[in-house]
Amino acid sequence: MNTAVSSSPASGQKGALQRFLDIVERGGNALPHPIIMFFYFAVGTVALSALLSLIGVSVTYDAMDRASGELVPTTVAIKSLLTADGVRFMFTNAINAFTGHAALGTILVAMLGVGVAEYSGLISAMLKRMVLATPKSLLTPILVFAGIMSNIASDAGYVVLVPLGAIVFMSFGRHPLAGIAAAFAGVSGGFSANLVIGSTDPLLGGISTEAARIMDPTYMVTPVANYYFMVVSTFLITILGTIVTDKIVEPRLGSYGGDMGEKADAMTPEELAGLKRAKWSFFALVALLCALIIPEAAPLRDPASGQILGNSPFMQSIILILTALFLIPGAAYGFGSKTFESAEGVVQGMVKSMSTMASVLVIIFVSAQFVSYFTYSNLGIVAAVSGADLLNNIGFTGLPLAVAMVLLSAVVNLFMGGASSKWLIMAPVFIPMFMQMGFTPEYTQVAYRIGDSTTNIITPLMTYFPIIASFAARYQEENGPKIGMGTVISMMMPYTFFFLGGWIVLFIVWSMLNLPLGPGAVMFM
Image (cartoon, rainbow, N blue to C red):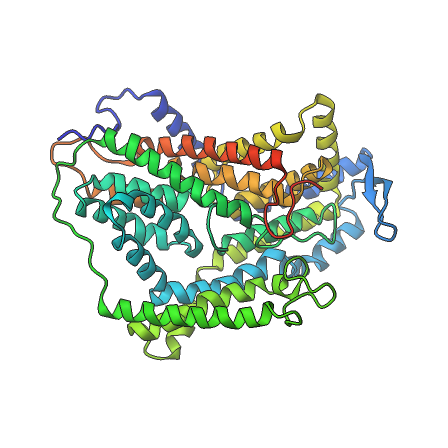
């Protein structure tokens, strides 16, 4: 049976798409490891600061006076890092730059809770329960929705939901590749949509905070800065993913001629018992939080204004609260399902999650040095003011510029995987520049996240892409075309186009209505 899925031709000739993807893969593979890249950036910053300082580069812009709150003309010149003061700064500030990085503490604390929920099996069981309890008519939207929700827990969606999507689709007599496509579209294509805050939000918020402080040392981007936009995006991506799967991808695949005997396993008694305990522990924790938030004199309200949002203790402790919302139900599930025999299981879950953070810690250390050099030398301010002036002079400002940021992020993502790695590079340049043009860091971050998500599913450089291709290859038909990475890319391409187009429309409408992006997060300065 011919599945009608495009694959690489048997002959040596390649189509335009395949040639383009070959270029993307070669270009991406030519890039050094992000840690090495940030080292080069740091060295380049040192050299550039010395050169531009030597020729006397400076800019003048309106800055806010902290004492009066008024805008006053301010002139900033490039400071060389190769002077005695610059060398002293690089040596004495290295540790402070690392330990003071806004993303460091937030991501480590958040991962403690997520690690326990993942290690105990809670997240996998929740995904399985959601998909298995779905009626046939709602199978596609629930699978896409489950994929979107799964991205709160790093790898769970890729290793659990994507293969499960194929099995569940087959159990309903549908093409398994369509199930893989729907799940993969939700997990990776919908990476910046969710109904809850995950580990990525504090990480990106921390990076954005560091970049914003190049212009305003007091600025803070919270983990919930894009929450409202993410919630609406969840339903948008679910709807678009359903349409693409049912109307484009699955009809193109045709009928599946392979073995349809593989079935999804039912929930075990242990899993059900664990989920029951997790549910009641979650409700108990929510009740406790309500007692700490809702009463007029509740301790987590702002003592001065009585507000729950804004600069309240509740918002300041949001990472700890999110950690508890994962950790406690995760531990309850572990004991209920017998995956944890003692409290050591909880500890092991936290330790395992920390062991996965090794590369993140090294990247943060090296990138923190780059950002601190960038800030000390005033290169960030000069680049931001000069770039903003240039764009203003040519009339490329406002909403068209923001949409261009979305498209730039989508293109860059084809060549470099990892949301945080790219944002560590782009944020110190684009956030200060956009701040000079009146856009908040939260708004710039949203534009970045839209583009970053939509091309995840078509780039071979994404970490899990080869694994998804191997899942798809399991459903190779005896006489059908070969299923490889080209097959997966061609299958996922419609999702990228629809997600990117739909998200840009939502972004434009949101901007025109000037809606808040999250609690206390506006779009314009």
